[in-house]
Amino acid sequence: MERVETRELEYFVAVAEELHFGRAAERLGIAQPPLSRAIGKLERRIGVQLFERTSRRVDLTAAGAVFLTESRNALAAVDTAVLRAQRGGRPHRLVVAALPGTGSGLLARVVSAYRRQPGAAEVEVVFTRDHVDVVRAGSADVSLTCGYDDLGGLEFTDLAEETTVALLPRDHPLARKPAVSAADIAQDRHFRPEWPVATLDEIIDQVAMGELIVTVASSATDRLGPGVVAVPVIDAPPTWLTLTWQPDVPAATREAFVRTAKSVASGLVVLSAPGA
Image (cartoon, rainbow, N blue to C red; front, top):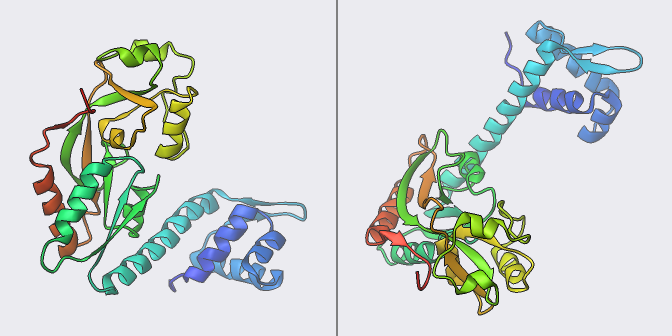
């Protein structure tokens, strides 16, 4: 069978997502007749019907639904291959992704120590909520993560253990305690068990104004202002700061950075909140 081209996959995905040849053609910036012919040619080439067509509607067949999933994966793989090739062709550059507020103090020390090494690559730190996804996509070499969620298929190494703290307004009754329990803070109407969709600075401002209470890893406490207090949560499990990367992408520069990070973190048994 003649190999399917990426252009044909893009055409198919557009029609499959729009379920309308006219809208798909407009999305692709082409006329509808050539798109219809391309889809018909694709179906003949792979030997299965991908769409059920009537005068009123277009639907995916069972084979079309399977092909849609695989086509998206294939196009994503092509994009990743291009990104990795582009990065591989650039001289001596390392992109480190991190979730905003995660291990910022440790990350700063690691980057500083790495930059002092002879022959160190240029380092770019990217703060993003998609810090794991950008490693998978190949647009970052390594990511600093908190915990092990969503690390399937990636390699990682532990750097430092962190305690969990509650961020409280300074005038909150619990702020005067040396430690609190999860039940203590759960009773407050301002407590949010899930991390809000906001930057760390925005969250700290909301806490200071008495509008929010959250739990965070203790490394986030180096950004607190005078209006916020970090109190250890005694019954919350600790988390680990980890570095993660793609296992199938050799990179001597990345390996040197990982070695530096482990060396810097080796003396940090537990990162605790100030005064804890």
